[in-house]
Amino acid sequence: MSTVNTWTSTQHFWLIILGFCVAFVPRFLPLMLFTKREIPEWFNEWMKFVPVSLFTALVVKDVFIDSESYQLILTKVPEMLAAVIVIFIAYRTRSMAISVITGLIAVFFLSMVI
Amino acid sequence: MNRRRPNPKQVPDPNEPLWRSTLRVAMPLNLSYIPIGLACGILLHAAGLNTLLTGLVSILVFSGGAQFLIATMLTINSPLLSIVLMLFFLELRYALLSSSLSPYLKGQPNRFLFIFAISLNDENYAINYLKFATDKKWTGKEALMVEHYSLLFWALSNVIGSLIGSTLKIDLGIVNFALTALFLYMIVMQIKNRLTVVICLLSGVLAAVCMMLTKSTLGLVISTIIASLIGFALESTLRKRLPDSHWLWKLRSPGAKQSAVESTDEK
Image (cartoon, rainbow over all chains, first blue to last red; front, side, top):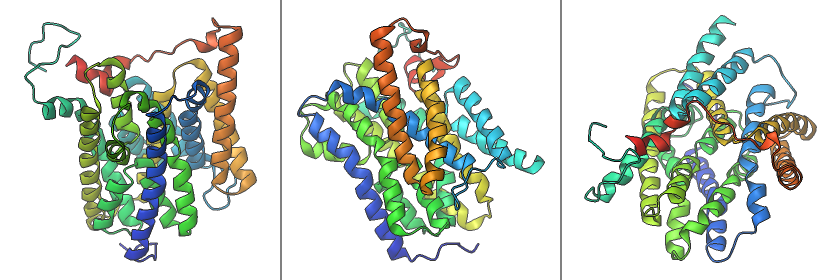
């Protein structure tokens, strides 16, 4: 299978090292700071809403936004329907694996039909 | 499982070795990492990463979302800087996770915190946070073991996925949906009251508008900040003015009892 990407392994390596740095700092700094002093209450209350907002934004990007022109697209019908199925399955089962696998199967069959 | 437990609330067997009791806690997560890790490995392979580097990225970055993002951005030939920037914004949420764990890790040496931070991620956080909150005997040491178990399963499934990717031809558009499904699952897990549902919808609309305006993934960051601030403001106003508001009612899932973490306690 031919690959679309033309990067060399060295470039991939540096991407991974940089990726490690940006992944590590947000995990480590708060841990180091807040084990020594108290976290302000408002900060916690605010941060509670960050994951849910970010995840929704990412899903909207995957389903409704074109990855090159950044315009709204409403043509990904299989993905939209599969997303509804995943939400339902996740709500009923609370299992990450079942949700993801059902989603993959759903999008596979829906894109054949639609 | 078939072992008899006198107390349904589960009294841990005091003679059970630590590696086994922590493995039992981590196992539902480990198993669910296998299909997602496989999908991620397949995508990374298709993006041109070799198997060795796929293993490395799984250990060093150790984040499903980030690795799927790397794969997607590599296939559309994004420049290095924009991939790293996008990763940074995606990984920023860990600031929240690690600050909420910090009360339980007070007094640990920096060296421990360093190692703990490297293998922290969304899912093992969820397990550890719940264990810290409900189990007084749960310490940093146990939490770190859970992290390492999940890391092992994640990295192995990625490597195997990468090897599968080199032998089979797979429709990438479909495998890519694994990331969307993963995020959808995490959203559902985050929904605690009706207000969160509202913030969710708001964030979705904001994200679309911001991305169309900025013509880049920076819109994601802007909409996340705005939506979370609105959620924070709405919740504190509601708490103060209308503490009985139905917007703050908890939502209970019918499947709540089978949650990955709780089921390990009940079996």
